Length: 187
Image 1 (cartoon, rainbow, N blue to C red):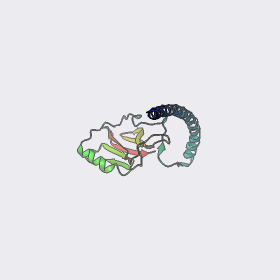
Image 2 (image 1 turned 90 degrees about the vertical axis):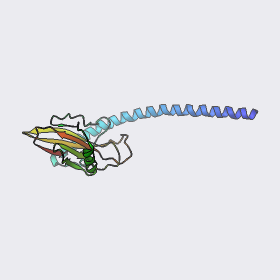
Image 3 (image 1 turned 120 degrees about the vertical axis):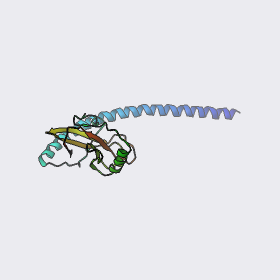
């Protein structure tokens, strides 16, 4: 009976010790995360300076060194709601026919016009290996009765938590009635 009591006390002491160490480790992890965020802020400001230099060289050469997709970080997260279109809307009523059409078009990158309504377009990014990608309209420029819509495909930042699944990001928009022609320009 005495041995069972000692074993129970040792188990209880071990459990308390385990939870104490785990709790302290959590506080240390929070401090490490805080330090990593501060370091990331310093790196971001250095990257911004480097990006300014790269942007200047891109303007001179007209080429991008890192592909045609823009990587976004947590602080630079550009939402597709950032540009509220004067000449387009993202509020599109989706019925079964439109849903089936979207499903058929989202797999291949490109801009597609819905055949049943000439004012509805999908901008598809194609297949991506993770979540965190998005398609955004960055600018709209009216030229007479025509409009140029500039768009980007944004990628997740290196520290962003993303879904580990294949995704097919796209943006569905409807052009306003007074626009005659739309040109989509990828940035």
